[in-house]
Image 1 (cartoon, helix red, strand yellow):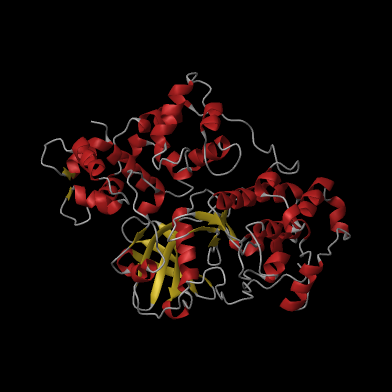
Image 2 (cartoon, rainbow, N blue to C red):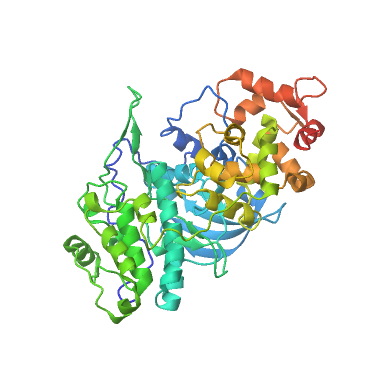
Length: 504
């Protein structure tokens, strides 16, 4: 891969935050929660909803009480990534240690945490927990053991068109989902896509949201929302769109980066080259590239056409949705009918009590791809437009055995526990977990109970439920307790919790 050997991310501007005039430099002594409070304008909501982000906790205890660090996985600009083994469960995680001294711009760090907490897609890395001590903050993430897409390209020189198409489909899915949630990654490159495992057909995971930005702003005074153009020159020179270099751009910059990635995947070298960053950026602005090398003789015209339509000026560039409909990409999956056992699980979840739905959502948020590979593939195939959500229309297409549209609508309503009108990834996994298996795994049951038993007294009360969710509706929490409180003492003990989980 001539001209593309440097793996370190080149941040052309050191996040001088033109995007957000309220960015604040902070010292290393504040706690994560104190830092977060400076930027967190999240409003409490009146309706009770359950979200995956409710279960990404900032732990008060030491990381070393819960995890044993077993070797270094890699180093970055801001810290080290270790292999972590949970001392109780044996779960293997990637622990990203970030030095407080190197968090010069707290906005950038919080961008990453916010993105990882809220984004919920099979092709995006999962964040489980956050720990902190006086010197470091630790992000406990999903373990990816298959290496970087960069390494796969280097190892082979370049990828076959079939390989590239299968991987590029996943890249587009991750971009579309981010854009659907008004987040631009701003540093897409092969180093920031990891393979979940060493298997040939392993899933790709988008990582490193340190330069990501929400381009959907809410005015604190008027509470009006708007989409804003971004100004900060951020990213890595090889993959930076021309408009990013000019400090005025939209989320479309990610699609330019995707076009550069596809070019590299198919030939092994970048479309724009220079001996240093400045020369690379000048080449990007000039916008001249070709398919003259003999390696391109074996690449289809459709693939070249897709690249051409991604490396266009911003206004003419394909969107993720349009790229997914390009002939080179579309129709790579067959239709699917939801298997009977999963249909039964969806119906069962729909009718479950709120406490059980919350507990299953927590357990779903802790799963790995190996635990739920079948359910994950069903979700991806039901999601026909690949935006990361299953709509009523998509659910109907996958549930041909259910002829009554009202029944399907009721299933969607019961599974859509964050009330956004569609089924997201964790909701689908929570609803299709093998409940018979889950309730017989004592360690998982106790773990789920402890999530709500905040003070550890062996009982869950209204205040503890209130602490777990961002909701001002006190009646909702009273109802949750009453549904499970079989002895009428106003609290839910572990035996009552088990009965709820077992539908007794």
